[in-house]
Length: 184
Ligand code: SF4
Image (cartoon, rainbow, N blue to C red; front, side, top):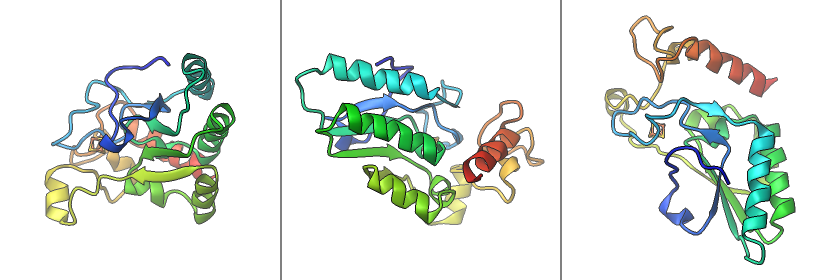
């Protein structure tokens, strides 16, 4: 495994093998959260993720790996086919594994079709950790949890009010392209 930066996981994943599917958080604007502020979000090449799985199998040779957590902040944003590929490799390398989990944002779930979610579940996705934080729109707006009337406005440079999830060049349009790729 070749971990990049600080790696976070839910308390209930203390005994899990953690593999970074993504680096950072695709939103990264929440006022109360500094977990991924030092990282620029990106999805790792699949071959690197699978190589980490192979390295882990070698390192933990003789140990039973019962749980796998795909980090970082919102691995569910990845394309379903890519998640299925990585999960398939995880299941092949760790046949003793009983569950795969990851973080995801509500929008990541909404972007998946029902069929996608069923496929992920059947491939071993047992749980997606979602930080709802609050049911109050005013609170969500204050903490900048991340919501916008147009997807491209999630990029601060594209948002006329200067709000959004990230400041990077073209971030809003990158998110739009990512969504289009995922829904093709
Ligand atoms: S979406 Fe989650 S991980 Fe990302 S900044 Fe907000 S609280 Fe942190």
